[in-house]
Length: 460
Image (cartoon, rainbow, N blue to C red; front, side):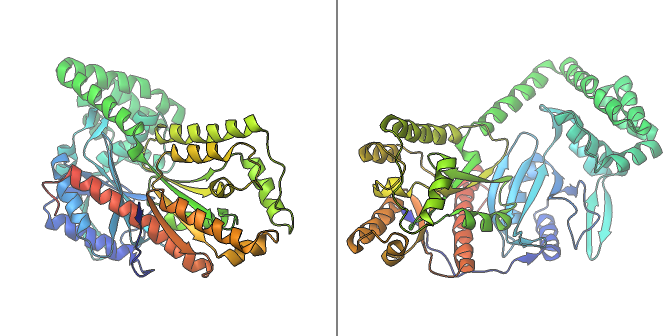
């Protein structure tokens, strides 16, 4: 078991403009060749997208990570490396509002299923400088930027992003011959011309209809040029995708439980806005036997003298505990496309303390066994309350029983592996900040371990 020791609370975060300057300076100091692919129009004051997209060489990735780690006041709290993009989640950057994190995407190759549709070297050689405030950085040529903006969604997902389409259409129309010339080496003249003319025509359905001919042409041309190399690239792509989607490394689960049986959903709701961008997806979850009954139970708990509930049947209770156990194990290996942070409100307090005043009607020994077999969640947060508060919720509860329940809950949380116990009598804002600090500390430590294993020769 490991209890988290939190540093003093720090609410200050780096303004986006300051971070951007520090990032560009750090990348240049490491000798990284890069360009910003899109959404740079608001730099340095604002970010038009949800993340920042960079194009880099695969060989520069260790230097990229080292540069980011060297930026004071920030820390990497998430890292996912897919065949076509490396996603880095950085905490300590303000983009306005309550958000305190930023996603950085680094594309080491512009490819579909491992097959390159636009060479990284060609894009970086043709990149042009752009001035924004006091910053100077490279962006793709207009033709390359339009191609990337279109094909990154069309080839991957078969859709056209409305956000980028008008600019892509204008660029293709103004540079028709250059665009066809840039596409022809990988797609052939016929497929390239058909795509460019469909975009210029403006009918998005016709553009979507180009997806299949583009994919077919890209695959066949690569297989003809180098069948072994192309087959290996495709096989490597699918192998890495499978490993990522069905790995527990792509799921981080935090469970929040209140020792007095209060609803922990309010704490979860408060955390969701400030946790945005610490992972690719931040989702709310629940850890309870049955959601509808838990809500009914919560309503009954709010009324004095109504703590005793009608328990479910013996076999129904065992079935629900078993279902909860199996669901959590399945969720650990369920396919996640990218890093997912799951923040769960926990409503299993009565099972933990062995209370008969819950809807559970099975043997307590079975409930305790089920919890021992439960998958190890990444972090437990106990909102700790005093025995007096427990008695105020249940007038029938004796002082000795209230003390026993408090100690039982603390003992359970301490046995879970990684945990923190927060004083729930403090102001809600303080509890929220400490819970946030515990979560990002956990994410930061796990990511640092991951990065050291991945780049052990390059990182300090």
